[in-house]
Image 1 (tube, helix red, strand yellow):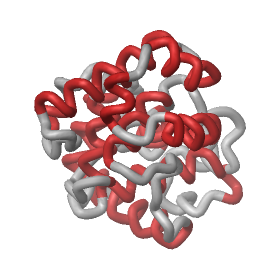
Image 2 (cartoon, one colour):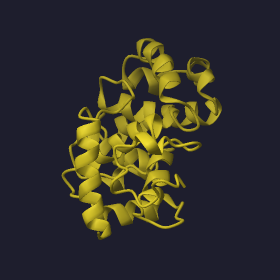
Image 3 (cartoon, rainbow, N blue to C red):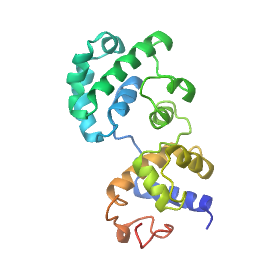
Image 4 (cartoon, rainbow, N blue to C red):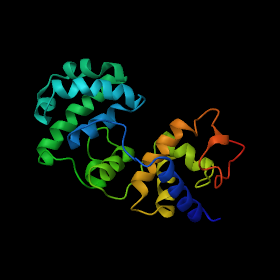
Length: 212
């Protein structure tokens, strides 16, 4: 089985195991997903959802984020960790979105990467979830599982993993594929002690039954 054939098989099996491929972060407006993803760095999605529920009520518009004193934003996101840097990025993002993009989150990688604190992982999530574009979100789950599934070998660089997956995946499936990898990484293919004996991907996984 080639890597591309395995990627197609994994895509099908993940669809069967996790039919609902959705982002765990909760949001209403496009910029709220952008901000929530920024807050999720070194923080769980569950914690971010608790924080943003109140944060987006306190600051209900981009204008309110742009005009808010930095210490008020910091107070609202303190439990997410790295709150000084994250608060600065949220405020600066709001200012730039209003000044340069008419209050809309950009729909292309080049402009997304201009936003303070936004890297390729967040940009890809926006492109896939907001704009329905082909996207590969290489978070820790994606990187770990891509190695275990043999899509890459001993590779930890997010961009290299993204590049490899773009060559293997059906572009129409890539965004949902990454969401399903996160679900599978949390539920089954965990960082420590993966549940290989119960894995729906066991038949095509080159790491089975080793669980590397």
